[in-house]
Length: 487
Image (cartoon, rainbow, N blue to C red; front, side):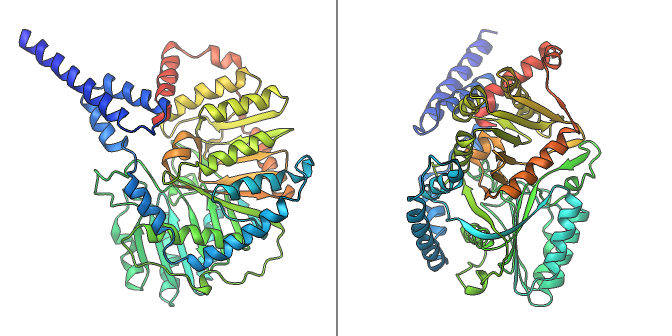
């Protein structure tokens, strides 16, 4: 028995030593993440270390360098054009009086341009989709009208009914000579059988996974997912938002119920920015044939729209956390109202304090989250942060019609963000994400209308609901919150 205790003590000692050395070897990791990993590593000896090796290692400097270099492949001419537009716009914006509340959009746009993001696209027509069937019906109709190319990138791509419908539309146009490229994340698409694309590839279509094979489990990018959802058709029509490709996004999974999401269909020069993002991601995979700049990928767009848009990307290849910084700026600019819809509400300290300051300053802050989890740990942490927001005067609505998966923010009926980034630390630091920031009162009011309509299918989080939580509920929320920096 003494030998058993000596052996057990040795394992614990070695595990603790390895934990400290492993976690603290990365001096750039934030303190909250360090403590979260130390908790995992020491509560679950050996198993915790295996989890860390799969999910905890950061992207190496060499990999970050490669990603940044690959982002320049094929696109120097286009990026030069965009940079010249950005210089002109910054000179114009510098002349604006930021004390004038009408100039919020210029202050916001200037900040985003200064953190390596594109200039403002001025001429866009925008259509919202909040229902999966309507979104995919329109997407498939647009694909079938393609004349030159269709570029598709989704985090999740399933080979179920809707997946087969999308692939069938791609096969139809590929057979006519249209260039078709499909990219999906190897983890998000882990259930996908390669045979789904066999016919498409026989017609000349190309398919690829982003950032490594799904079978390469020790790939250091396993925890760094391409969470973007982008479709570009002929360089003229673009889609971005929360819907992935799967029957659950049509509300066909009984345990999830109706699927409430938000997606954008864009016509205008903002589509070129989505095209840029797709080409960079495609070329960064390093497995498929590279795409080089050609004018037909960025055609002249005849749009009569007036919605100003910036397509903003972020990912672990940059320390700037561009989308999170955009959220911070939006919340700071708000004087009257902030409406947030998100499946996961796990703000870091900076965002939490900024939201609290807005509430205490008299800004109406409304948050809408789901009534059920698709990731239990993340949902429990979400409930904890939602309670904290309610306690300081924010309004928290629990969507009760099905699953709330929309990722939207709108402030003062003026500036809107719609995209792939959840309101959580994973989206800000670990995932590759893309959001559209829209500067248009009409689209902002439309998003507010959707929010207010969803309120009718929601209930308000109250003190009575919170008091009914059991001790077990409390434990799950607090434990999940401790792990939130690494969820």
